[in-house]
Image (cartoon, rainbow, N blue to C red):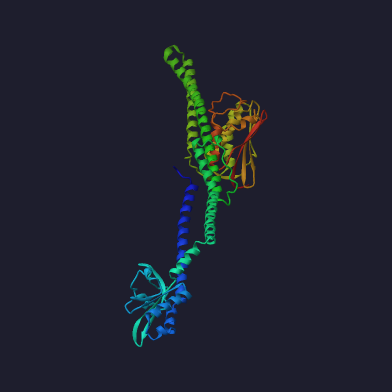
Length: 493
């Protein structure tokens, strides 16, 4: 079974809490026990010495075994927490104040006694408990001399059997048990509080993980799932992560939509281009086949007419293919820009001269305003010429007989604006949003005999973006259109 983050954290906290609580309990008990034994032994370290000096039976090193036993019994009644033993110089127990059946040792190790007598400040020191085979307790000890001869030791166990029995009874007292239960309950409450805190902080992470799993299951389709709106991304890292995830999902959906739309546009473009390529190709093929079939039956005039028609369709096919390659090259983003400083007026006069005959054929007035345009710009002259040429060609194509087309140059703050205006058919509001799409033609576009592929505006818009500009459109249906772009000016007249 897979465990959630909260469960793993909860188990880890419980496990760590139990270990730390156990270690703390053991350490506090050990420290308390050590401090108690140290204090008691230090407090009673001189007890044996005072008894040896103050008791007539012991102060001269001469003792009566029976009388000494009675003395020890009397002292135990006065101090039930002490047990008294008299040892010979070898550590053998000679006299004691206990029932003989309770004595488990006949001899006591003397090195702890010597250590305490010589270093009374280094406590606690533990000595053998005569009532146990392996147990040790704190003690007080004093040597017994007769003259200069060591007669033995007075060995006093601090906290004897009676003391232990009473202490165990106290530990089993109900009030003490209640206090212990209260302490354990407090620890458990602390553990529950910690688990609740962890749950509070891990709940958003769990929610975010579930949303990630859900959005992955629906292939990142945001319309099929409602994502949480994280309200505090500035001060909460989890909310910030969730908010970033929402933005990422939104971006992915936008990219999916864009890719779908681009794929639709590409298929539509291919369909249109296939039709446009097929039309001149079929015409060329038809005329050439006719010339092959009829051969010498054709007159010189007919042959020349067929060849001229095939040539026109061949040129139209070439122009279409050239524009397709140009558009594809621009979309690849591998276009180099050759920037230079030049007078914009000279370029505009050259472009107008190039379209003078075409405008004259339709009796269209073609002009530059102002006539003396002295602005100097820093741009790519070839690409700028291509843009304005496409715009001017479109303006002439969609302007009726006796119309007007003008290139108007005006100064902005630190730029100049070049606008190609006409009083032609204009563009409806519905069509303006799509006119820069490849192969799009407005619903009210005027048809003429000029061969064109319908890619001019798409190419012009991409070229303008390469020049860090953008083409803007202002048009009213039936009143004409204005296509404009801005350029960085080097100096003004």
